[in-house]
Length: 400
Ligand code: KG4
Ligand code: ZN
Image (cartoon, rainbow, N blue to C red; front, side):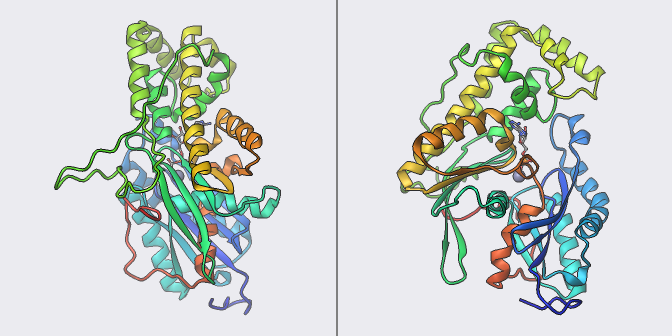
C-alpha cells in the first residue's frame, strides 16, 4: 500500500465511484468498514418519463454529475485527495457509456494523483454493501462459505462466496442466474403494465399488503438448459451447467400478469390510473390515495405477483444454501429493499437457524460505498487495475 502523501500514514481510505446505470455515486470508505460519506445523484425522475433507463440520457447525466458528486463525497468525508490510498471504480456489468464516465474520471484522477486504481465488479459491490454493514454492526455473524442473492433491476444471481489464500482474496462461484428477465425488471414491467410509476418495485411493495396474495395462483416451472446450438451464444445462460444449478426465470410471470389483465378486462381501469398518476407526478407509492386508485381485483393481482416472485427467490436461495452447505446468507441489490422479501427470508432463515444479513435501505440500491468496500481486500492484496482499464458491460463475477 502506498503511503498517504499528506498525513504520512496510511488510513485505508478508498474513494469509490459508481456510474454503471442511472445513479452517479461517490463515497469514501475507511478500511472497507466505515463509510465516511456516501453521495448518490439519482437520475430516476429523468428516466421515469420513459418508463425505463435511456442509455444516452444516463451517460449525459453522469457527465454532468460526476465532478460535483465526487467533490461532495470528499467534503462530507472531510478528506483531501492526497489522503486517499486508492480510487475504486465500477468496471461492469452495466451500460457501456455510463460505465465509461466513471472509469475515465477515475483513471484521470489516479494518474494525476499518482495513486492506485482498483476496478470492481458491480455485483461484487452489492455483496460487499452487506458485508461492510455487517462488519460495522457485528450483530449478524457472516460465516463462510456464504450464499449471496444479488437481486436488482438488471440482475438476479446466486453466488457461493469464500475467502481464500494468505491475502484473504474473495472468490465467487455463480450457482444461479436468471435465464431471461431480472426480478426487478419483472417488478418494473408489471408495474408499468398496471399503470403504476417507475421504478415499479416500491409501488408493488406498497400496494401488495392491501391484496390477497393467494387470489391468483402464479407458478414457476423448472428451468431446463438446452445445449447451445453451434455458433449461437446466449449471454444470460450459464456457461457451465455442471453441478447443481439454481437458476431463475421471470419472463413467464410477466406474461401471465398480462394475460390476466386481458382476460379480466382491466385495461380501462389501468388507463384511468395511469392518467391520474401522470396528472400528479409528486405522488409517492406510499400515499393512501394510490390504494384508492386500485380496485380489489388489481390489489389481489399485485399481492399474488409479489407473493409468487418472493416465494421463488426464497425457494431457490434456501435450496442452494442447503445443497452447497452455505453457513450464512446475504441478500442485496435494489429488490432487497422489498419488505415481503425481507420478512419471509428472515423468517425462513430463523426457522432453519441460518444467519442472514440484508443491507440498510440506503445501501440496497446502487451506491459507491459498496464499490469502495469491495476494493478494500484488493488494496490489501495490491490487486490494481492497469492503465488499459475499459468498461466491460457484460462483466461476469466468478466461475462458471
Ligand atoms: O440495484 P438497483 O438500484 O439497480 C440495478 O442494479 O438494477 O435496483 C433497482 C431495482 C428496480 O428494478 C426497482 O424496481 C427495484 O430494484 N426495487 C424494488 C424495491 N425497491 C427497488 N423491488 C421490489 N421492492 C422494492 N421495495
Ligand atoms: Zn445494482
